[in-house]
Length: 224
Image (cartoon, rainbow, N blue to C red):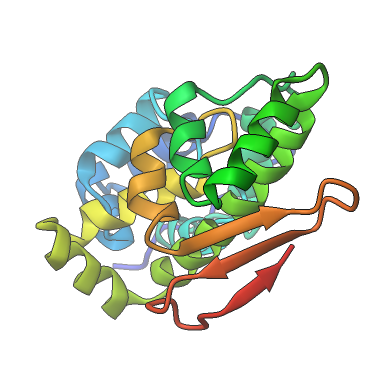
């Protein structure tokens, strides 16, 4: 029996969950089958379809490529929908939570951390805090993205954490969708601390020196 034809290209965005639900119905496939094809828990797909989970960032190309192939969609349909649903508007910045700051600044030399904390506490210090958080987050996301692209690495990390590989993939996707304003203490413990050994920032140039832990595939200093 021939496979159903590829969907007609979208002319305007719709909710990602609505598009996925419609194509599953047209193809006679289930959410469980889609989850298995993506190596993700069925709950992840169910939440996405129901609108309880925001679509991943469009930079997660492998996720959208896999879903596009399974649902026989046109190449950019899901990206069009995800961009519209996520929105690109500027969000007002706010300070990180106290525990998040404590964990991040524990990776900085204590005397230097006190100087930086005093600077951040001044009016306008939120911008400096975001520079620090964004760059540390970028380093940790780089590792998470490499692991997500490495099927063997996902399985190894999952075994170490007592998880299924699908659960580890879900963790990685969730972390890659994290922003400085949604970063949690658990994110820092699970993803930032294992990669970053120490950091500092030049208050004049805003250049950061980030020292990676020796377990990183490319250990050493990184400047951002």
